[in-house]
Length: 121
Image (cartoon, helix red, strand yellow):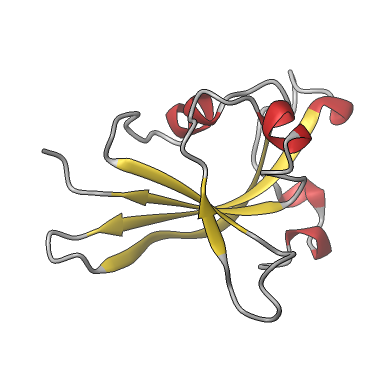
């Protein structure tokens, strides 16, 4: 894990005026671009964010200025099964709300997400 929990929540970017503390869902997000050759390059270093618990993954992509189409993959780091290794699984349902994904055990507060953008086409 990249350790967002150890950083002050105050460093997280989000709509501080309209999202109450109790409604905030904290995530650390890295944006990665896949090149035509299949290589990955980090376009933005991991950054802490918070969103409304009712926000969808689609809405988060939109707020981050990313295209919502079949060319984006969202991966979440699985902190429980890694045993010291970085293990990720895909979140294929981009219409899922954060609160529902949390109930299903797919996400939790301070999850580390990697958003991979593939070339359009």
